[in-house]
Image 1 (cartoon, rainbow, N blue to C red):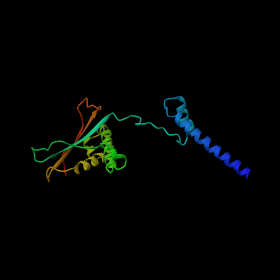
Image 2 (cartoon, one colour; image 1 turned 135 degrees about the horizontal axis):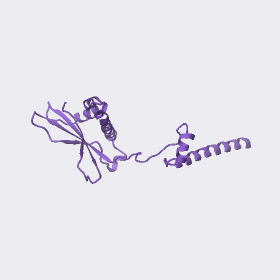
Image 3 (cartoon, rainbow, N blue to C red; image 1 turned 90 degrees about the horizontal axis):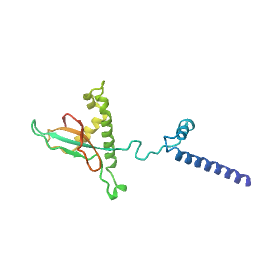
Image 4 (cartoon, rainbow, N blue to C red; image 1 turned 30 degrees about the horizontal axis):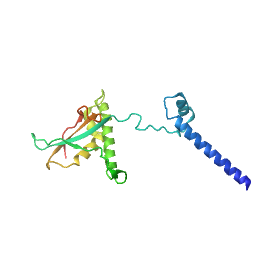
Length: 183
């Protein structure tokens, strides 16, 4: 009985020592610009077991994106620009009941993906017209086309704009203006 107790204590001590070491290395490696952190991360941690928690991402978001759309009713008549919400206002109950959270998050991520792919299509070898065939563009177009139409035979155009600053110090800047698409 004493032999079993001793082995149980030994195993328990080994597990506690391993978890404590792992926790200590995780805390020390959160400062990624140190020599110690680089040594542990690239020489010792061969399996990637030590996480790197960067709250608010390595490059926090500094811009807000706005998705607007309008309809072309006739050749000379256009509807007013309408903004489609790609973020949500938090309510008291959002932590408990928030059925639109995933849809808004997906649309927000797709808009960011579309914005990040624009320089590739504008580049030396790229063609901005091919952007219309990219998956982020098509998803944004589909989301915008689901909004209420001004007329049954409308053509829809969307615009992406970005603003920065909480107090809206600057006017939103145009990022992308699509062509009119029949919806």
